[in-house]
Amino acid sequence: MAGHWRADLDAVFARDPAARNRLEVLLTYPGVHALFMHRLAHELWKRRWRLLARSLAAFSRFWTGIEIHPGACIGQRFFIDHGMGVVIGETAEIGDDCTLYHGVTLGGTSWQPGKRHPTLGNGVIVGAGAKVLGPIMVGDQARIGSNAVVVKSVPAGATVVGIPGRVVNKGEQHPDNFEAYGLTGQMPDPVARAIECMLEHMHRQDAEITQIRSGLQQLQPREALMPVEEIACSLEAEPDSAEQGTSK
Image 1 (tube, helix red, strand yellow):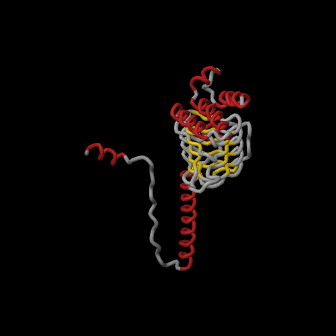
Image 2 (cartoon, helix red, strand yellow):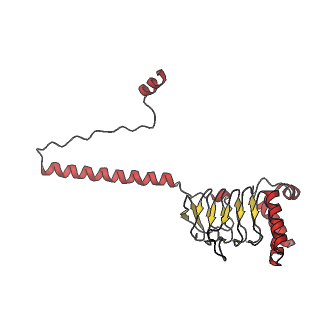
């Protein structure tokens, strides 16, 4: 267990530039406190000292604001940054080198006994406020964006954003590339992408309408077609309207 603790402590310096020395981390990092107490509670849970394990987990929640069920299985070099509001369920499984930020929930969606919580592979990063729900699998090196709600399994190396969570990047796995809050340089903005698709569709329709008008003009050269007015779209308010608004 001492090896686990030493590796967990080293992980803080690898992923948090604000960490300055071991004493400061040991005294002031609630994520480290919660993890160390969970290591003890999990050993008690495996030895069937269930009440004592739950009591230690309850104290850890009171002290750190992080709730980890003693039955959860957590790998090495696990790091909870900031930590407030993190909830990890009983049957959750977390691999090595994973990172969770504040407000993350690894929750269950079933009342039935058995596997109810997610499984995280190695090197997974879950951004602040994200909810990963149900007995799903999140593959190695996957990234969950902040405030995403994930209810389906995530392939290895993918990036998931939105509600419900959608895969926006099936990138290659980069074990040595840490990306805070699950943000990646290739992560697109879903709203901007939707607007781009709408504009592309509108431009295509305009081209088709122009082609149809040209064909009609050739078929009926004497018929006058309805003129098409140019619509001026500007993101800035016109000077006259702005002045009228201020005068009122």
